[in-house]
Image (cartoon, rainbow, N blue to C red; front, side, top):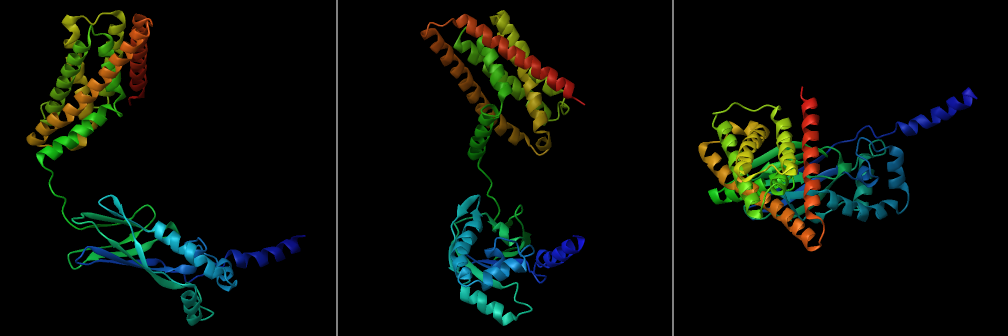
Length: 375
């Protein structure tokens, strides 16, 4: 039995270890002309690509089956062409650009090249595929990805003598070429961008803002009072962010996060107890807004050193207006929900108390969880 096993193993090992030793990496040359057309020539090991393996992983047994089985190579060309086109992806400033294939290896060319190389060196068969894409005007950055089956691709992308990049592109690291400097955004564009960022800071990213606004609303006597609390909260939020950015306050540490959750729990508990009276209604969100502002300052601590006074003004105008708009939407949605409850003749007071207690428990629970998680 051992002898039979050894004979079987000796027969099997050559087929397991027969990946062609002369494999080569793929290479690509991309040239952009004066009309903004990119022509890309990719030289790659065609048979290994057709069998679905990277050049270094393709075994000679698989390659021989492809090349020597009548009709199989011809059948593999069109699927291989489609796979190559789908896998070679070009983005201009983050937007996909379509390719047109100008040339792709045929079965006859592959067999002829392998034959010219001789029996001992029949693999790899390195041939060219040629593609073309028309780039949009004023493009800033190109990003080029290749099919995974090509493995590492050595890339030379260039536009005349002005811009050039030479690099190795892999599955997780595409080739990139910067063609021009990014134009400075106008103040209006910056404010619009910051508005969107501020809105997203609350919806959908800021569950803490949402719960705090819900607590403020549940403890308010009217929709207008809840909206005023939201505005005061945002002003407090702005004060501490500005103070940290200008260096008037030190950088907050991770200790601030538990206290943000605590403000949610306290606010909702006061709403549950019916203790958010008019005289304290504006003081509470103002103070708690200061705390939340420290939390945001901690989140962007790496950028604060690069902010000028002008940047801070734009941030306060754009970002905080976006925050306020999202908070107003949260309050408006809560008001609409309770109005629906009233119209349905459901017990609004009990639902309001139940929501307040739920938010309070969440706030206190997150406070404890974060507190215990501090190092």
